[in-house]
Amino acid sequence: MSASLTSGTYGRQSSFAFSGAFLQLMSGLFGSRPVARTVGSSERVRVREANEVRELARSVEMQSPGFAADLYAAALRHEGLDD
Image (cartoon, rainbow, N blue to C red; front, side, top):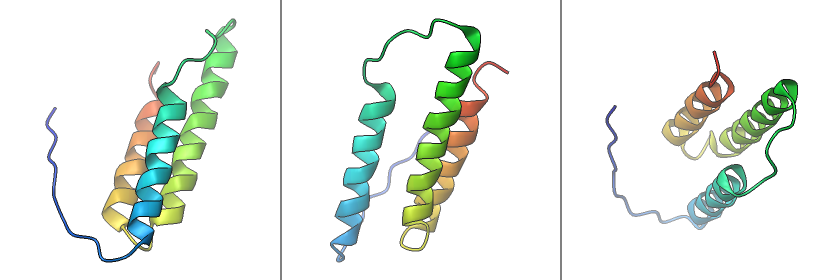
C-alpha cells in the first residue's frame, strides 16, 4: 500500500471549509464510541459512516473531484471491512 501527498495553494476560502468538514467527519468516525453489542449493529454503523463520507464527497465533488473520488473509494472500503 502506498500513499502520496501533494501540496498546493488554494485561493478559495471554500477549500478550507471542506477540509475542516473532512477533519470533523474523520474525528467522528475514529473517535471513541460504544462497542457494538450485536453483529448486525456494527454493520449498520459502518453503512451509516460510509454514507456520511459519501455525503461529504458529494459536497466537494465540483471543487475537488480527485478528493471526492478518494472519499468515495474510502467509503466503499469501509463498508466492506468484514467481507
